[in-house]
Amino acid sequence: MKKVLIDAGHGGKDPGAVANGLKEKDIALAVSLEIKKRLEANYDGVQVLLSRSSDVYLELKERTDLANKAGVDATVSIHCNAGGGSGGFETFRYTKASAASAALQNVLHKEIMDTLNKVAVGMIDRGQKADNLHMVRESKMPAVLTENLFLDVATDAAKLKKNVVIQAIIDGHVNGIAKYLGLKKKEGNQVNNNNRVTVKVNGKKVADGVLDNGTTYTPARAVAEALGATVVYDAVTKTVNITK
Ligand SMILES: [Zn+2]
Image (cartoon, rainbow, N blue to C red; front, side):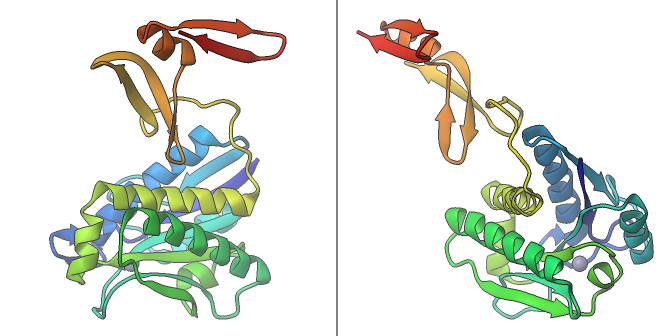
């Protein structure tokens, strides 16, 4: 069983960055809760610990103590940026990071940029950086801090207000962590609240489909029969033959 700590930055009396009607602590928490849900729902052999699962204040030391005591395989701290400029996405490892931390940063950074670029134009990649930050310095395991766009840059704030961008940030983290830890996707496409697609034929619902990487998977029989076709399944060759 692999263990990962997702640390939602700030919380409680510490809102983090506040600008353009957005609070860093709220975005960090929403993203963190969904990362846990999706990792555990879609992958085998992974347990996700959260430093906080509600709007509470925690010292930085409490967060890294939790990671170190639990002996997690990776720590990812979720933040949004502030400080102007033209905005964008960046990640941080410790200045004296291990090779494993650098590897975690590399895969996470690339996956998040990839998913962001699929849903938004003009996404700025500020790069993979190193800094003397508590969360990445005091974590005894590979640790990375992600800065998911700038709340005080109007173009970034507008992106963060779009659900597709938040979903991309979540999925990018999930994909990156899964890749780094070598997690295996659960067998079959399991329908959950995040990937459920309602499949209609001529306006009438016939089945629940599953959205996976831009493709909708749906029961062949339900759709074919609703279109007046005949479905024959051959269990020996595992073949579905649809005829009309
Ligand atoms: Zn922060």
